[in-house]
Image (cartoon, rainbow, N blue to C red; front, side):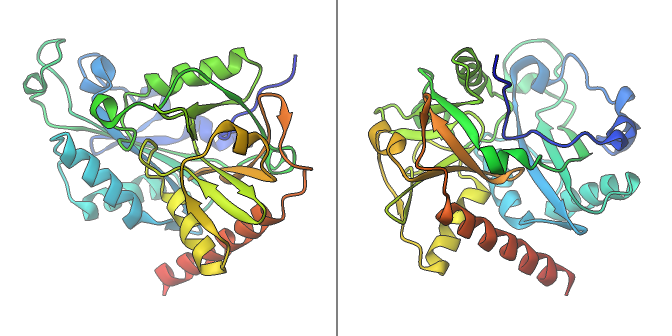
Length: 308
């Protein structure tokens, strides 16, 4: 059986065995970090989260992540309980308590809080929000950037905004979990998800791009998460003079592409080796490599600007 990989495969780091986790202002050992079984996030998936990266002491693109986080919370009437400065202070407290400086991945999670009864109505959440921050020493494995990821087209689709808008980075991830399971059952690493009209959209975990004749294509963005790294790649292509199109395209264009890659905060840009057992291109990825280099340079500039 072929070993399955994910876009979040990281090198093992023994320091993670004793990390301290932020839970509503307290920093506790990971073995003691707990939330109530009455918490809205546990009961209903009622919450929002962000994944952030720490490079050389800088939380990369913090403002972009906070734009999405606060917009999402506002849209679902979820009181964050603090402003951006408060979130930043909590991140910094967690980082410093763990003596973390670089190659750190953070999952920041906010739920509607503890309910007085185990039912759906938001008014039953009366304790105020629950904020949890998990920071781990986390460096992506190198092999994925060499061999690439294997995708399988799955029947689970990204839905219409009036069912559950994919732009929400919510705790309600069952749609993506089902897609991931379908891909695993097909012998692939991740699921390539279509939109409600049958056009290629995203994977269960990352945004999706293809390269055809030197031009980069990605979905319209109507049915996918408004990924921070996705937008950075679009902006970089424009700045670097690489043709970039946000458009509808089908599996025909995807499987016959010259290159394909995924974007995400953790893996940055991860090459795609195959879709539905069909190899993508020849294995040469000059445009992907150019974008990867430009993104690394962007991170370096961002770090320098934040430290200036």
